Length: 372
Image 1 (cartoon, rainbow, N blue to C red):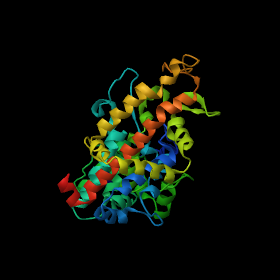
Image 2 (image 1 turned 30 degrees about the vertical axis):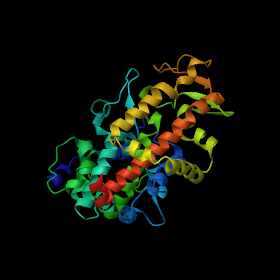
Image 3 (image 1 turned 135 degrees about the vertical axis):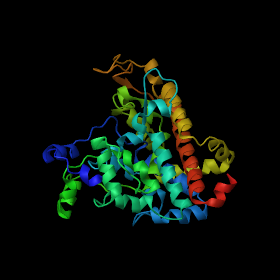
Image 4 (image 1 turned 60 degrees about the vertical axis):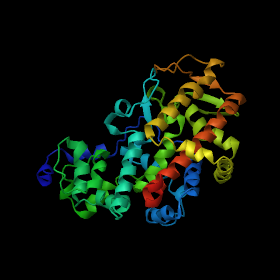
């Protein structure tokens, strides 16, 4: 069946061009690299010995822990071959929304909450089957032109044809929505030609493991402006000045306020860990609700009530040219904006780390899962 579908006569050049075009609706970076490493370190601090041992096969050569893989999905999303994953880093709502609803606000199941559920399911399947497939073996299948999984992934979105996937591993169905186009005669090319087509772009980046994706997306979900408004791309269209630096509102929350508090991510993580150690009840409080949709709604509330509150007392142009957003084109943020929001940033980083640690323990440590 697949082979018959591959005989399409669509022009090779046109489909090759599809590989070179990546349409971005919102930058993937959240928290910046340091914020993601902080979330990962806090999670790693809380891993049981069983969970810690279980994640070792998912770590690539040279990686010593979760902080080393926490930022890989950002680099991957910005590459030509990884552009399919960009929409997994955030969730958009319309300007009048007061809540986020995964069923309504996640078109094509491509948003950060669905991504967390997807990669959690993949990793949990690996553990229940006592086999290591998705993070590396399934990734290899995806890049192996002879595999049914690879062919299905390439064809599903490009053709819209409902394929017979009976021979695809059960834990791999979630990969079919990646949306990648290949030349119609791709599977008739030589091995060397296939490699050349797959790596047309100079920014080719290997796909991260399922663990890397999960670590990263839990961090993304806790950055308030990653559950925000499409019309200004989560604050990326809002130009601001803070600490004598001209930047965008999104980057203020990604990095600027974090760097102002502590330019060392490891020192920042140690500070948050010390606070958690002194307030152990927060582990129970933060893990009471482990629904990614609830986490997204927390972020949206901070977006609605805190992230944009500066325009109430700042001079600004009343709208971004060409945008329907009622947010300022330029605003000068004062020190009190940082003072009002740094505790929120610290809380979101801590919540992300605690929840990620709890989630990973649940996935990789059966005795922990039985108790929780």
